[in-house]
Length: 332
Image (cartoon, rainbow, N blue to C red):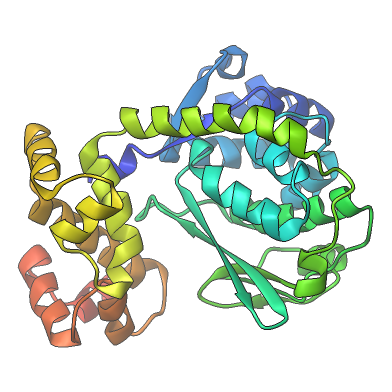
């Protein structure tokens, strides 16, 4: 599924400063990842997901410390310029910060943040959009800790989440739970939750005038990113979001991408594929991911892939692979 693998992450100048603060040699970390040793000297770099994940693993290996996410949170500086950090710190509170970061997260990488408010709880849920690739555990945990670090940096208060859930718990777990002030739970989602009071707590770093000055630049960068991404890849990303709801007709995806159905079809065909082919490849890749990497029941996987009932999924999977979902899982 070449389109989905073409998802990329941005490397900005803050990486050089962060690695310096961590005491990590950029050249050594890049060498471990099999990447050019002068990569971080280049002014603007985007790495394919697989390369970015190798870089992340290389940094962790070079650091020699399983607490990389904690070390990174300790090294973040308010003067470090990166779009998510700037968008967050200029915000009036954590809820607004999360919504802004969610809007511009695609500038950094193929991730989505869903912000929900329910009664007295505000939750941020992270989803990676480059399946079937799996992000490194330390990257997932860093993203979860980021909101806590931002809240504390911006309020100068010891803000604690009320719940942190992820699919694989980090080690040493005690160090992470001490930082968070709450026990981490294992679940099917990557989610961090705060009380509504903490989510609305005033940010001392709030600066609306600076935000208004900079926001048009972010909007333009987002538009440029969309323009540079192949239509088939944009369709894949939209399908990943829409599959669980079953809203995956060409009409629905075209509306989500701001295109007419005819324009969408023409652009896809110009790239040498079809909507049905992209849908099939997306479903097949996700099915293999869920079967190989999770213990989700087949019936639930069927739902997540947008099938009306499990038998439809069984028939489709056999047509794709010549085997059944259960046989594929046992073969791992």
